[in-house]
Image (cartoon, rainbow, N blue to C red; front, side):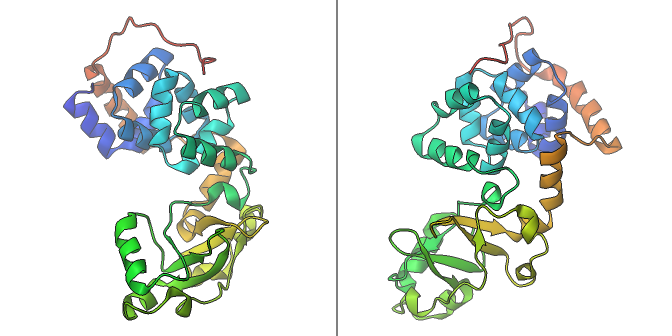
Length: 277
C-alpha cells in the first residue's frame, strides 16, 4: 500500500506522477503500480504517452496489468495496446471481462489516425418508441456522459435520428421520442481521417457528432473537446511518441522523487521480464 502523503500527491497530480514513473526502472514501476489502488493507477496511465504506458503495463504481473486496464479510459488503453506485439495483447485481453475485451479488439482494428479510434462509446442512446418519461428515467440512471444531442437508435443499433436534451426536458411525459427527434445534420464515418474534421463547421453548434460504421451501425460519438482541445496533441503523440519536458514538470518530478522514498515495498524484490504477457 502507499503511504498517505504519496497517495495524496498522485491523486492530486497524476500527470506529474505519470512523467516520473515513465523514467523509473522496472522494479520501481512494478512496486508502485502494484501498490496503487487500481482506479488511481488507471488515471496515472491515462496521463502517460502511449509508449510509456505500454512499457509500464508489460513490466507488471499480467493480472495486475489487466486490473488496471479495466479502469483505464478506452482511448488510453487502446493507444498502449497498439505498441505491444500480438501475443502480449492477446495475453492481456484474455484476462479482461469479455465485453471490454471485445470492445478493445474492435478499436484495435482501426488505424490510430481515423475517427473510429477516438470514438466515445460510453454515451446514452434512446429508442424511438420510448416515451419522454422513459427517456428521462434512462437519463437519470445511465451515469453516462450526455451531450446536448442524444442519438436515437433502432433495435439493430442503426442511427435513425437525434433528439435535443432540451426538447426532452420540455416535453410532456407521454410524448414519444420519435415525435421529438430529427434527422442528424452531421454524421461521421468511423474510417474517415481525424484530420478531416478538425475544422468541421459543426463544432460551432454541436458538442458531439454521431459516428457510424460502413454498415450504418452507431459506434458512439466524437466529442468536440477531443478535437478542438486535444486533437493536435493526440496526432502529435501518434507521430512522435515522446513526452515533452518542461520546467514545471521537472520541479514536480523532483518533489515526487523525494516523497517516493516513503513507498512501502521490498526493494530486493525481483522484477519481471518485459516480454511476459
